[in-house]
Each structure stands twice: as C-alpha cells, then as structure tokens.
Length: 365
Picture 1 (spheres, rainbow, N blue to C red):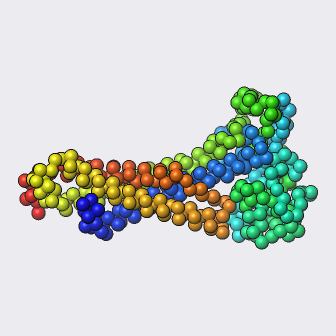
Picture 2: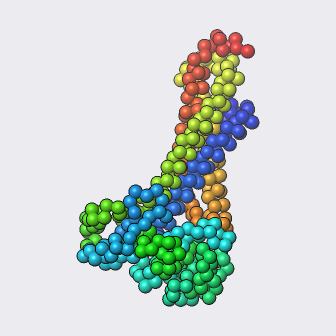
Picture 3: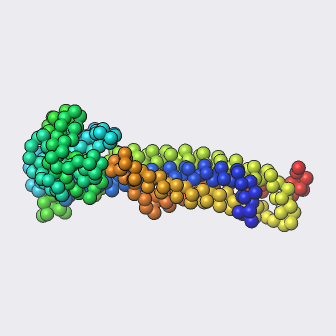
C-alpha cells in the first residue's frame, strides 16, 4: 500500500527521490574523501617508523606550517629521542598535473628510508629529484629524464615507491634545494620524531615537554596526527555543512511531496477514518510513505556517491591528489541522513492528516 501510494504521482516522487539522492551522494563522497585523506596523511606522518609528528600550531592548512630548523635540533638532543627528520612540502602545477606534491627531505635522513628505490638510484646532488612510481607513469618519465619544477630543471635520479598514494604521486628533492626553491630558508613543514625504545612508554610526557618548550609547536602521535590536521577538520566541517544544507533542502522537498499527497487523498483519508482507522494509523501510514521515499533516495544516493568516488579515483588529472576510501561509516551516515530527511519531511504532513475530520474529509472536493 505504501509503495502504491507513492507511485500514484511518479513524476513528483521521482523528483523528490532524485533530490534526496543527490544530497546523500555528496555527503557520502565528501566523507569518503575525508577518510581517504586521513589514511594518506597518517601514512605520510608515520613514514619510516616515526612515533610523533610535529607541525606549527594554530594554522588553517598544513601547507602553511613552518618550523625552524633550531626546533628540530633541540628536539633531537632530548634523551628520549632516537632521531628527528624534517619534511618540507608544497603543491605545484607540473605539466598536465594541476596538483603535484613536491617534498624536501634530507637525502641521508631517517625519514626518507621508507622511500624504496625501484629504478635508478638515490639522490646525490641538488640538481636531482626522485619521482614516485605513480608520477613516473603520469609523466612517462624515468631515470635520467628531466622534470621541470617552477622553471627549474632537475634530472630524475630514481623512481621510488612507498605504498602511500600521496607520496607515490609526487617527487622528492634534497631538503636544502626544496627550501631554496620554495623560499623557505631553514624551515620545514613537519618534523617526524622517533622515540627511543626504552622511552616508548613516556610518549605523552614527551609531547607535553615539547609543547611546553615550544608553545608554537603542536605535537601528536603519528597515528593520531591526521585526525588533528586542519585540512581534515576543514573537510569534515564542509561535509557537515553540506549535510545540513542537504537535510534542509531534502526535508522541504519531502514535506512538499507528502503535503500534496495528503491534500490529494483527503477523501481517501476521510474514508479510512470513517471505517475505523485511528489517528495513529493514519500518522503511521504517512510517515511510512515518507520514510520509504527517503530510504529509496538514500540507497540511490549511496550508489551515486560510490560512483562519484570511483570517478575521482580513476580521473587521470586527480589520481593520487584525491584518494577516496569508501567504508561502512560513509554509507551508514548517508542512510541516516536520508532517514532523518524522511522523518522531518513527513512529520508535519502526517500530523496534518490526523487532524482531518472524517465528515469534512468525505465532503472534500
């Protein structure tokens, strides 16, 4: 009966379903991108076995982070610390790639050790660059070819692989050369810190010690760094705002559809009441129709969101720069959003239906 009632006005039902589906699809895609970004940043932060990751405190974007080399030297001298590795990064347009990650690292530092060379050799000069395996495929380049970064020519010394898409889709310069190229003398974006084995139980105390000594530094466990990164928080805020807008728009669309349905079925509802239907039964019927419509829209939206994420992951221009990772939380959130839409959009029409008096409803033309 519920589906039959919804299908009486196919056009209106399909338009409402499409509106719900589009809103849910955007929510699912944004959550998948946030989840993928979290996984990628975690992989970068924990690269080489780092236990802590440090960045500048109070910034709106990781690319704005700037820590002086004196900070790294002071932390390296702490008795709990085994090694410290600085990482400077920037995102540049390179050839056909609008977003290309370029990292600066010490060629002999501990942080670069997980960059496994699969072709060529490691860095030996300031005019050399390492290219990620994915990036080598993008540009169709390999050892001894040239790569132009901000007008500077660099010879590709080797091709590496780490298993982290952000890194494998980028390139690595010697840290000093990256500082010169990006005009960030004696600065890095992040510090990766390895804690000595005997001090591994004192990580929280070490974090407090670092932040007390350097108030402008934010220190996190590497496994928790991504969740605290401003980029992730910004994306989650956007996803929340889009979800709220989708809720309002979808609820209004659903409410309009259900209100029209109630008005068109006034005599029918009056007949049901005259036959003995209780107000709660009428309320339940209208809410069931609203929830069924929103659930169908939610399921279609989840499929659309999954398709959108797949397109982003396969796009040659965006591959490696945006990595969507679909999982149960994204789909569950999408369906919850859809059901909330149904509840909000159907509540008032259902209440209005219960207010119809049987005699007046039967006289309605």
